[in-house]
Image 1 (tube, rainbow, N blue to C red):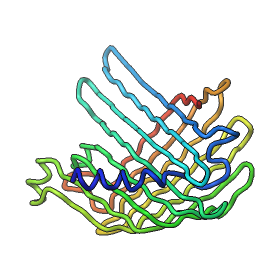
Image 2 (image 1 turned 60 degrees about the vertical axis):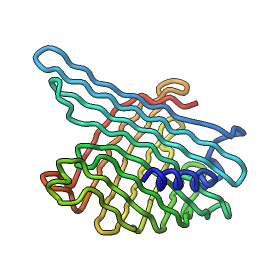
Image 3 (image 1 turned 90 degrees about the horizontal axis):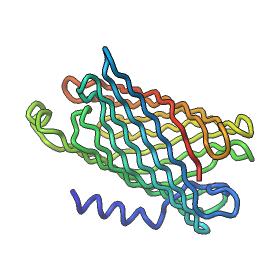
Image 4 (image 1 turned 90 degrees about the vertical axis):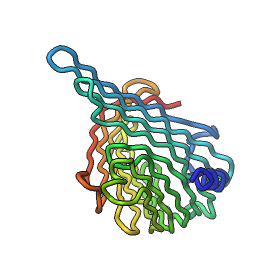
Length: 245
């Protein structure tokens, strides 16, 4: 499994990106966003939650690189109720101003789904269907692969410890600037093979001062065939501070 993950990352590294002339705005070739949110309560109720995200972009002519790290942790009365970690790389080679070839590799840990980890990757064709100074709409489609390892408890219940599938991978990515200081984003990702795995993220970002902004996001994850005693739909609502650099 380590060899599969290493190969996927090495194959993806030369191709990282999202098409479009404004991948990194201005004359810079590197940009990023750091996002952080936290909630703490004490007294009759002891709870804590932390949400972190780091999104990095690197542009080199027709090559554009994007790297994403995410983490979520929640605890209620000393009991962990949510824990999710994600690292991914998305990359493309621009063929024209609107079309590109993409490749990606992702690694996710979410023990509350019954899986120890999930590794996925995909390649294919992307196209910018709509593009103005304030708004763009990208679509991507291509073949992909998902590998999942079950935790010990679920492996005993299901009778197997790994699950893998060739999938059809699709992405819809929409972004529009509502004003000079606010923007709306909608991203939908789907992988369809032996089952359907989908993720939708809807967010609204508004600048507070300078490079500091407030972000409100609703994330929905869907699995058409969840493991025993697991739910097929997870939702996550976040209010975080975002710093652009």
